[in-house]
Image 1 (spheres, rainbow, N blue to C red):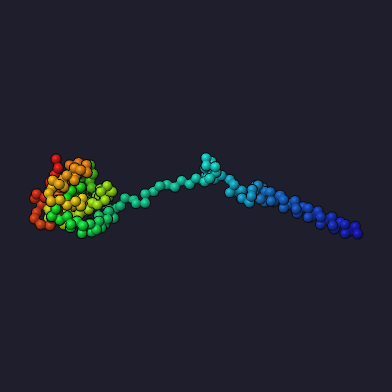
Image 2: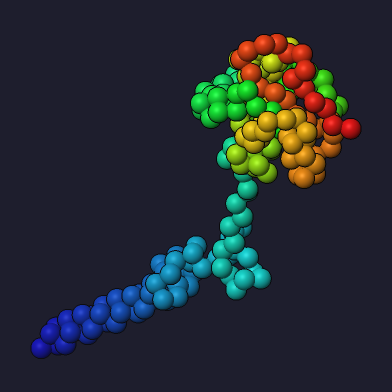
Length: 199
């Protein structure tokens, strides 16, 4: 009988110790650091991305990057040549008319404090197209009315029967005299008398 009482006492003591151990483990996470609502102690600590000024909400700073980096020379030349091909048919509608010429550039040309290369010529065209979406890029070598045959030329698709009218377009759009003037575009004749500069 005494043995049975001792056995019950030992079992009871063992259960009590086991229960106490479980309570300690629950309150310390088994590693001595307190847990709250099942969130690990590591998650409860601030980290480098936590901004105290936003109530502990992580503040992620993403560097703004340009997804269209400047083109290299080969890519810019390919872009220019692709544009020439796209604009060839609409440009033919301007043949034997005066048009406002907005730019004329070739690789190696020094103008406006810049020695132009293909990326700069492409950037110049894009800048003009951003302001005047209908502009066309033509190759001077395709037209007898150009003395030089290796220029990328940007023109406004505004055909006129005389140079004065083309120059009035330049005036109306606020271009400086050297930045826009009348050019006669043709496959016939020659280059004499095909440019009318503005004063």
